[in-house]
Amino acid sequence: MVRDVCFLILGAVIGGVITWVFSQVYFERSRSLVHVAMQRKIPQLQTLPAFFKVGTNLVLLNGPGQRMKISNISPYTYEVSRDGTILLAGEVKDIQGRVVAHLQDSNLYVSPGMNYDVNSDMEAIEIVDEKLQPILQLRKLSADEIKEFIAKIPQRMPRLAGVEVLEVYHVSYGFVPGDSKPRVEIADQQGLTITGDTTLVRARIRNMKRLFEYPGYKKPGLRKN
Image 1 (cartoon, rainbow, N blue to C red):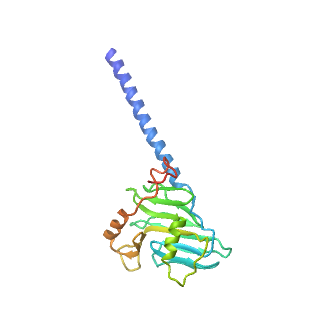
Image 2: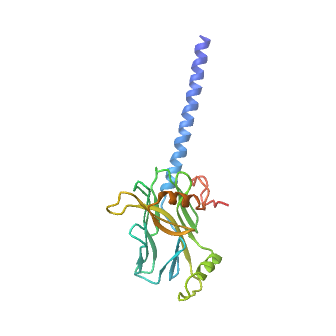
Image 3: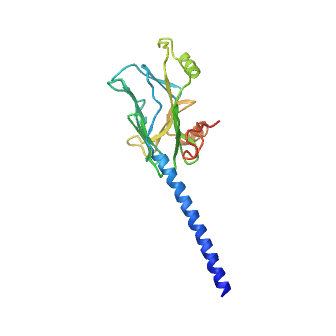
């Protein structure tokens, strides 16, 4: 009789512990999904001309009505609307062609439930994959970084006071009609490359430095040292 009571008590304790563990896991997962799914405004450029540093390349938009897309598989369109608003739009896809995130009117939406995480502050935003490797980084350059970048622009370009530059690093997969193999556009510290060599891309991704600490819902806005 005493043994039966002990077994009942032990079973109740074990059951309670299991229930608590599952509830905590569910709670943490829910917090993570809510964090990932939040709409985020990307760092804003306020001045024209609009400078985007895509990898090591320059995208320059001088005024309203201008728009540019780098390639037919490029995930982004850079645009200045008729009212002068500087916009970034497009989709980031993984190697299976699934949409990981999309940008509309310079708002970022990340697809929840796909093991990607996101973190941001007022000056930068970043998406990382399940290995915490960056697949998207948008970052406003500091004054010193802008001076260094502008110095590399050909002399025919104007030297403008008070310019802002948004650095765009990304990895996005796309498919060219008639080709079953994915093509990849990668923009990073090494430059801007469009390739079908996924081994090369994986090596480049490993060399991209993370901006933030993760998980994002536990460390919102915390920069990586």
